[in-house]
Length: 466
Image (cartoon, rainbow, N blue to C red; front, side):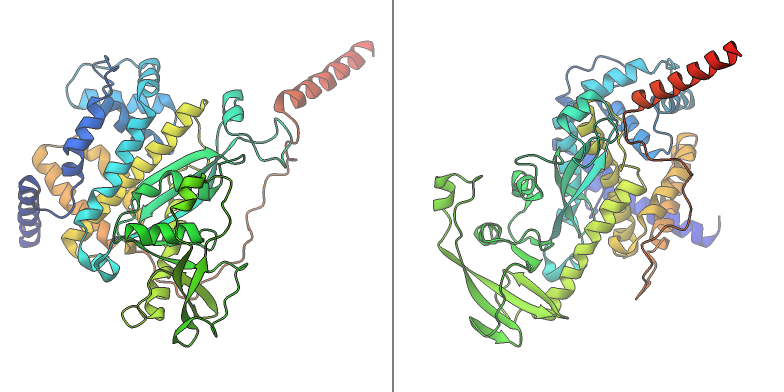
């Protein structure tokens, strides 16, 4: 064994020892073995199958959403290979037991796992990953399509511009992410349209994931009197792009510098969704800082102009784009853009499992970064997924000692997969690849099939008469 390999093995042994001692900064193993995670999984009491236990079902589901072939048959085939590799009893190739195990898996348990796995590593993240030594979070919304079934259409109606039967059900998701590590801290799912399904409404339902001393970022859709007042009340701070409807006159208020001042926002009229008691609990006015950098107006709760320069705050706000990139990664790389489950309950679980799988990958990336002194959000997510997919079969068929060496090598390779630095890059919003010359389906498929059958029958009758 050469010196470099000996060094890496000894380094990994020390790392594993610190993992056992609980001294490591971030560890997926420690998080999964935590009392809270074990309690969540132990509450799934309806599981009786010796093969598809709650833990086995969750991890099989995770591998299913990560695999390009997301079929139940492929997932069960993976379980069969694992059982044979471990020298255990062969599992039936029937997909029924696994399908039933997924249905028995409580949706709330999946969401609680996402939250626990998402927030646990942020508490132990390195200080150099945090601006001002504080946790950085961001929230944003996105939409996903799903299988076109009656149950899904009822719970998640399709877009109003699409004809009935010619579109897909749509779900709206609002996620809160830790930009320190990149994990999903909490999320909410509802229909794309209808009362109480907007991004602000969904954010209010999960706003308790914002904690004291957090710095939160959001686009211009979110900043309003009530959200800024809530941040002040809980001791958190926010930086947002200013809404275009509001008038920003930097000649008024308490002047801090050029295009930088503190003003009072008066409490608006009570919105329909808020009860009178809650409305009365808010102050009549709050202080908000407004500043302009690079032609863009920002609003923030950071009132100390000397301690928090406006250019520093605008630089921190640029990281809000990370949540856009992360959500795009989940939808494109992990193929969450089109969900396959046929019932609303399973759709919500499928979304939760995608977020759980994403959090697992982000934590492994954070482990590698903590070990090799790198920054998590500078590492390629897609590159890490590719490495995991290539390493996984070898982990199943190797000894424990060899797995340790491979895991150490994988962590080292992960930090080498850096995101490319492409300043000033821009591309036209156009597709070079031409689509196939088929018309768009504007009516339900069954109607079009009947039309084709009638045409074929007429042709048969004409030929028979001739």
